[in-house]
Image 1 (cartoon, rainbow, N blue to C red):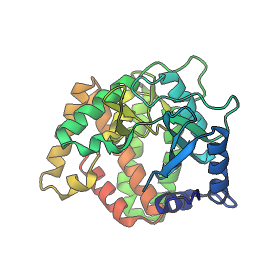
Image 2: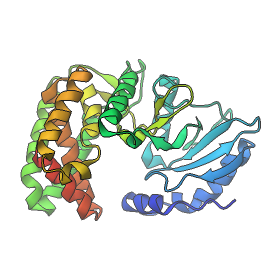
Image 3: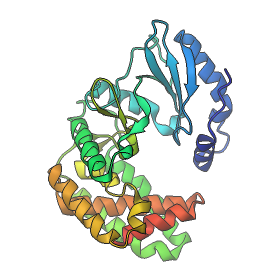
Length: 301
């Protein structure tokens, strides 16, 4: 079988590929070798797939349905492997036993229902189920963990945001507000937990062991409000289109903060930072429509 990367993956990785990177060019051969090493049978490549990895639905030699996920180093797949191993299938997809010496960037995962996420539910129900799944992931990190911290990740992002504001002065007031919020939030974080890092409704899929399980973490260690902030802006296009979008957003922040026992103002602050960071990044990589939605949303906060 030819492992052609889905167009969505090609576009997304093309936005961030460093000079000389040949991961996409090598991907078909890498996928062939990964399948052969596990003596598995390919059913199909997941389409349209994600923005940072190739997902292949396979059957192992004993008939077990599974997923092979292949991701480039810049997507931090080894960090994902470590987080999934630590969660051990509680709240998240289960990491399966692969070859004794697994290839870097290749994960063998429990098969969920890849086409059924909580996003398929009515909005209120989807938020409830997603939040319940997220709560199960917030555990103490391993004692000698190598995960990036919220301070480290947002520090890199802050530098890019400042550069973006210089290139597009119209974004400067929002960037200044987001950076000020970050500084205040990092001064006294209330807890340090292992976080999903990129959690949203589409990252929660239907499973067999339990109704919903999280997939695709980009794990980070820090306070829970940081993790919850990305969920606040889910379905942002619907929020922007709604006449009462700002009021809906305020109610969503309040409801999520109360249901997960997170400080409401800290959640608002991280929601602001993460929306502005995503908006500035969208401008930088040439997605002006996405940037417009995100920055308008951020302006409500």
